[in-house]
Amino acid sequence: MEKFSKIISQLTPLKIQNIDTDQIIPARFLKAISREGFGENLFRDWRYDSNNEPIKDFVLNNNNKDSKILIAGRNFGCGSSREHAAWAIYDYGFKVVISSFFADIFKNNCLNNGLLVLRLEEKIIQEIFDKIDNNPDHEFTVDLENQNFFSKDLKINHTFSINEYNKSCLLNGYDNIDYLLSIKDKIIQFENSK
Image 1: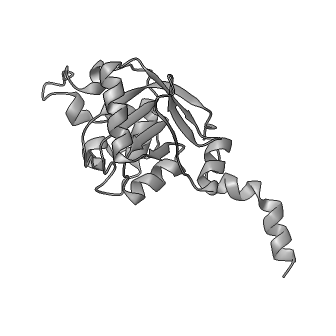
Image 2: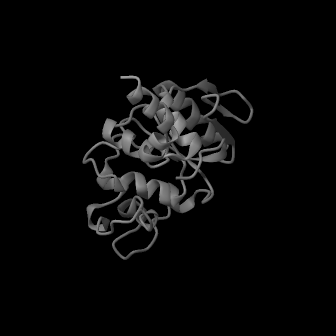
């Protein structure tokens, strides 16, 4: 996995609650077993009409394509446990998803695939939506090392929590096996101490 560094980006706002994994990546696109190529079908049924034409007013069709941060309404990633949803978001180019609540399995799938899920209170999410309504080009920073999320003008500035294991994996670009290999000496020392 890629190492997670500090992200400075505009936000892509998706003001919808209860976005399930079938909306993130519809089941008909789950035929591949590699992680690549899912991004082109992210939110497919919201991005394209029945004639395969882009729907003008959908945010991914009219927002900054370089945005690395997706912010959404409450209960993001509910529904089935498909890991492909995390793959699709990451493959599209997002490195961070912000919401006030994430489904547990979705959250773990994201963290295990290099995608930071950042949970903020509902009122803070609304402040952020209001800020980008007034200025869609406003930049925000996600600083994982210091567990801080803030706007360029610092009017929005909040810490966030993440467990040390996930933080270490993201900062170092580790998957579960890489992490175990990184502490191999400690494991051997523990085993030898018995």
